[in-house]
Length: 266
View 1 (cartoon, one colour):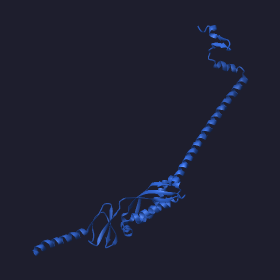
View 2 (cartoon, rainbow, N blue to C red):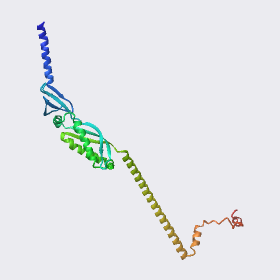
View 3 (cartoon, rainbow, N blue to C red):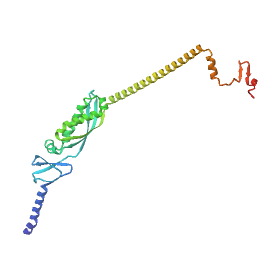
View 4 (tube, rainbow, N blue to C red):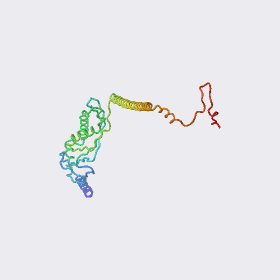
């Protein structure tokens, strides 16, 4: 009985131990990741690429670092140059450089978003918005976004974290500021309308002056023509006559039918 136990159980234990050792000697680094080798707590500078790798069993472990593009979205508040409070929501697409995986894990660990990236975003936003007035943050939004991205790259680039895209999702201002902006826009629209009305009035006045000058010139020419030739009035009368004689004549008390006299009625 004991001999049979030893023949069956002992080999099974040996095989199981060998399998455990073999499996502990192999690791697979997934796609889009790099593997950081940790030997008994000591982080190696060696970074493993994607695929199958061997390691010392029980004394080494491989920590996988995501090197794909990742996105972080955060919100907060900052102040403008004219001391207006701005509430913001921003999104950042970033990627960890393959060669920096080991140093990042060694110095920061896996919580690099909360330790490095988020504080750097907040600091960069506050530094840039303080250089612009609240109105400029609206009108020069693209410039503000570009400057914040540059400031963020400078802060986290030293850790091997690359900023790929920085987007300002929203800038919100106080109700008082929004009301002031709306009032200013209304005033500008009213001023533009007044300016357009003034221009229209000036044009109409010039047209009237031109028309009056033309009428005066016409009267002057007529007067000159009358002075030169008294018969000019008769010429105008005959020139405008349609060739038809009046059908009736009278002064109110007596009316004469010209057609009955001349026979034109027939």
